[in-house]
Length: 319
Picture 1: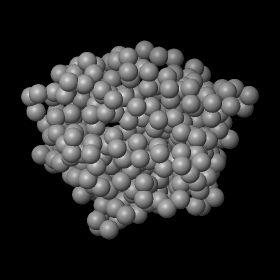
Picture 2 (picture 1 turned 90 degrees about the vertical axis):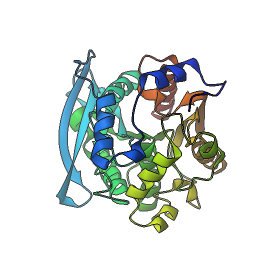
Picture 3 (picture 1 turned 180 degrees about the vertical axis):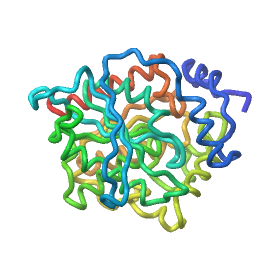
Picture 4 (picture 1 turned 30 degrees about the horizontal axis):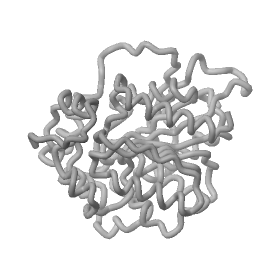
């Protein structure tokens, strides 16, 4: 696409000028993963006041599986419970196929500082090697671990939120549904950053933003094809939270959407469904922006989104 939409924000133009990625659907799985790492993984030494620890925790199958997590604690890990911070369990984006602890390291650092909480980034197992529902159960297992053992990283097990971007937002939404159904860990808030909420490519935003704005319709189809072992799984609410018949009694939510993003309409629809079910929702709309914009730390709109997330987390944690 050579002609950009007239309402595209200058910061979105800046992103599009910076990012020169081959289309995901034209790559192999390994090639797609490496391309994202080349874009997002930095060799620079972080300049922040965070204690960062890599841990291995039990997966959903107990000792049979383990999950790698990375904890970002502002300052030093406190020795007493009085200084424990709330915990924000985070699931990275990447279409359930790519992305890892390193690709989202910079963003998780920014979140930990903005929200003054422990961010627990989860390296869930990825498709196609581990298709749906494995990533959902991994995400849930990590959340349950945080609700029991967060004190290990200076967190308060009684104050837990979940969140993620894109496919990670999908997993966060699924975790809240699973926790409600299983009477599992109490979750105070969910942060869904341009989330995938439905296995459906027929929305207006898919038609309007099919190509030219980083995330394309063809690439989303590529991701879904690798995430689902069977297309019928797309109707499962843990894959498509928008199809859940009942969204009541779920945690309060912050939903971030971008105007020039194929996922815009399903994110907005999920925010509306939550609100209609009696859930408190902040829908932070960025009409002129593109998918992945929050990962660019120096952009004013990305900073604004992080501040909105931090304020909502503060309110949910009673701070």
